Length: 94
Image 1 (cartoon, rainbow, N blue to C red):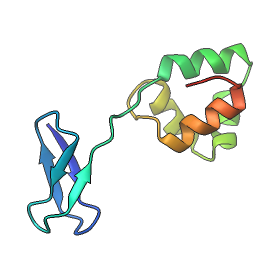
Image 2 (cartoon, rainbow, N blue to C red):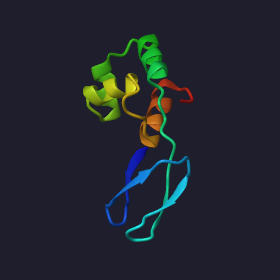
Image 3 (cartoon, one colour):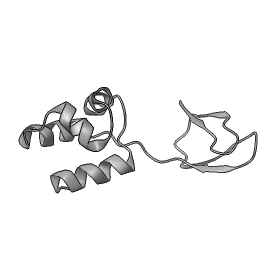
Image 4 (cartoon, rainbow, N blue to C red):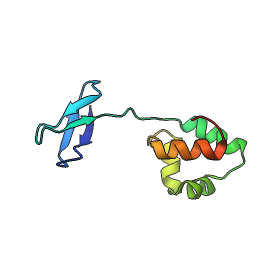
């Protein structure tokens, strides 16, 4: 089960199925659910290959080292913005 917040009324919505579109019961707005991207191992490998520390990569990405650590251990998903930044920095497709 996953929890999402409606972007219109900010009410939590529980999702148990694999639907990509759900309807908020409170305000009837439709939400499109994006799949989460976990690529921790790939980021660690790229960081080591390019001899970049976790703290310097986090600073370059504009995030905390703690958040990057969670991404690298697959405890937090990558956002589209971070995927784009990493791809540009390391010149690879993430």
